[in-house]
Length: 300
Image (cartoon, rainbow, N blue to C red; front, side, top):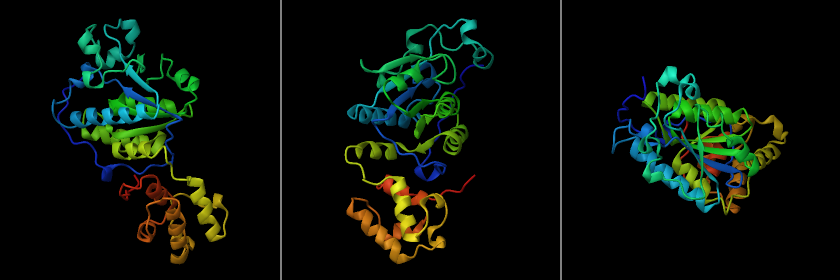
């Protein structure tokens, strides 16, 4: 019982990320960053100086730094030490006594120490919303998006994402800024998140979005849908995100007109880009992540 020793395993690559079911757009003015349970007790289980621990810490540091520049509130969750059985509840049955009442064990790792203006929540259950005021923090600050990073991906991170979804909070689940007991459990967590309750993205993608936030592309997903619908002389609501637009009747001349229109407002797209993956979903990814190669994935 308790936390197992975690063998080294590689962080997921961009090419291994699952296909997102939704096309949410991160807005720093709507978001809160949650750094989930990055305590010595949980991180000491990982193989030191190896993947995924090294990347996990580095990626969260980069994400936090960029969020602070943009005024995104930073919230930490941390479990208390020395919990009584009645406080621990059914966690006792699965994990034993948990963190000892020891300053080192319950402390957040030095490399990610909270700043004076960060919020630290005492966390009691898998979900960071349960028995905390995380919901109230988001409401008070007028925020309805949550960036999640930390450990463990398939337990607290995923259950927090699911809980947020059920409160109509959009979650951005950073696939290579979470870590888990194994590669298989890590992959399971990001697959579930992408298909059921969150928008999954890489650290590089997230940083790109944050860095471009002050000069955003003047196009929304609905703008793209409307422009395509006008070319097809159809209603925008009739176009699904995944259907092949060439099969729908969008020819090369009209695709080229979109390229020219979007490049005039700063988009980095080419005719070859759009023709290779002719769906609204893929085109939005090209616009949203202009420096990322958009990779095809198999639906599961």
